[in-house]
Image (cartoon, rainbow, N blue to C red; front, side, top):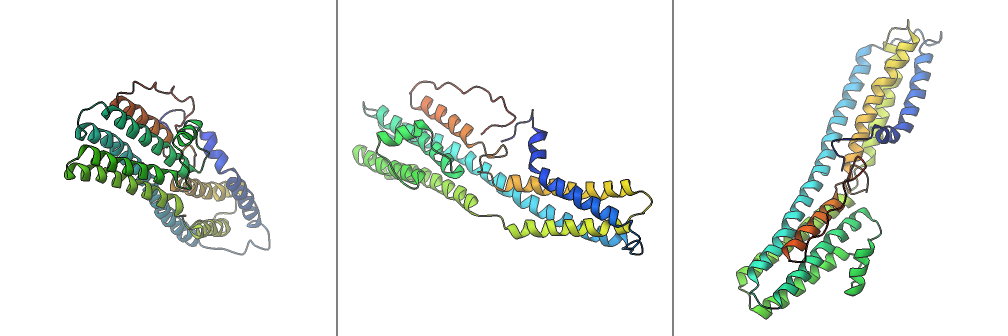
Length: 295
């Protein structure tokens, strides 16, 4: 996730450099073609170019709105995961009667829930699990194609054991189970966003219209200044491309990029909170990032 300060302009320019190069070359060619004797007689009213530009603007507005909606939904889901993780441990602290085994049960749930958050993070980003998570899985003999789902299953299995052991009130058990269900729902919503690809045909249409716009725009401008004409034909499409690239960056919030949902940071926060709630001591906070984003 981008921070408010030290945002890298170079990172964004690097993303659009090839599009920018293609636009500059194409705009230069079309701007010069407009001044060839053979094409001087062609005059396309500026209103036609304005119409195409308006179409591109409307498409970009829709594209940006949809991309931001996906990005913001991902952040809302992880906000709910933070809340439900704390709620799970708080319910166990409240509902399980005090006895010598209670601390061990709470610790087991807290560690497993922290592992679930990190496992979901790696699953969504499709990255290699951390050594700490690998050690946890090895210790508890956990192996699955969907590790987050397996960890929630282990939650449910231990909850059933705890319920039988302490004869928990049915209402209390339902409340804890409802928290696990919300965690499952959040996991499923994240997987839906991850696996739903934004239609590539939409970007293709926008790019096509941008190049149509660059093709007809020079024939509607005054031909007394080649440099100014090429400059206008270059700058306006570049703005369109920059807007579209911004939408592309937001549409996939689980791609391990600077605009990603900060799942690692949120998972570390959850781990510290749950450790404190379970009486496991204080986990030191990681140092502040030196980059312009957090993961």
